[in-house]
Image (cartoon, rainbow, N blue to C red; front, side, top):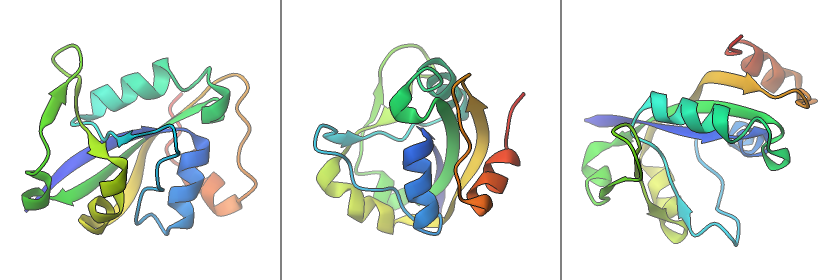
Length: 137
């Protein structure tokens, strides 16, 4: 059995996921102690549109990803509510992300793509097409 999770990301993280063949999330940066997938698409959309579009580090873009994770493995993590009713996420310690990635079932998928005024498409044509197929206007 699997559980569907969501992850809002910017362009740089999306490029790394693309480079993995859509199989895993990249290691956290030194200043990122946790990896936080979210429990519903609405919350992922909120993050992607409210935080990422004006952020240079996100490439002025927000992408919503969905993926399925082995439910038994997932049960080791507590769901954290960080605000309103939809603001549920998991806190995966950075050092556990590699193991977490091994329990992803299938591929990571782009479901939504949002762009700020300063967004520039990536040079990689295959990734660019994948992004354009999910662009929300």
